[in-house]
Length: 371
Image 1 (cartoon, one colour):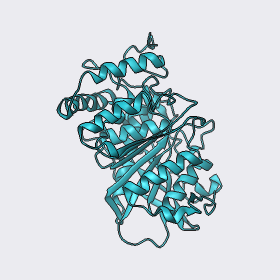
Image 2 (cartoon, rainbow, N blue to C red):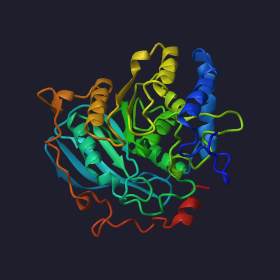
Image 3 (cartoon, helix red, strand yellow):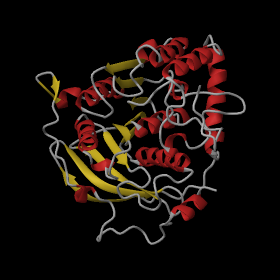
Image 4 (spheres, rainbow, N blue to C red):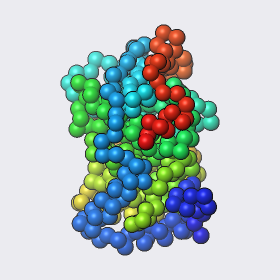
């Protein structure tokens, strides 16, 4: 049987199903649609369930962005700078903006939410810096931003009860920031993150049509619903009208380009045989089967490592019209020109650039913003 939380029977959390149960639930979901019209009826139900489950207002009380950018560093083929801007009044999104050097014309952009890490420095990890720098060298404007409680985002703890809602709002505001940049081509916007950042990727893609290309890495699973309150701590899967899974939420990307990156050592191990065929069926309704791909790495584990990044780079280059040749050496992705910076260099708030005095501090105060 599924493993409900006795305190919250309305939630589907963590390994909610066994693998067999997850596959069976997906099989039952498939019986609810057989063409584009019946799928779109279900898709509308799922989207409405996401918004209702997260208590997302149609017009959230956002603050003006008022971005602050500082400490620009020029690297080999790209620049990186430290950025903050306001999401809700008194709540600040913090991250790094990577840009290609000497770029002209309108540029594609990639939003990079990150996953959970043992320490709260996921934005500074090697795998995160590498992907941002390489995408910038390919010609994209790239913004990577902190999860709640990580990096510079210390206004509340990570696991506030409505973390899922706030991180989703922050993702939407991060898209607002990227699309506000004058040289960003709003028709070439992608999102890609791993693990919990993969959850943010498919949720944001489902809810915001500005996302044109989606690459959730090591996350889309029929039986695992995200192990953190920031992924499954609000009732988005089990609604009075229906029950759904992250597979169907990812399928809401259709017919936009979607790459699932999966591996053999976590809950995405069945992707080629369970999750991917379901999503392929949905894409088939649009005549868009070539827009969805799966790169499966059966000997690998749960990360955004070199081969997973290479798969993402090739997919993004194809669908965002980026220049893959800028990052190839002898036909292989070459990340050696990238510079890994010390966390202190990437820090947004410091003695010279303190967190604004109007910042709302503490879990209760941040939760009050979300009411």
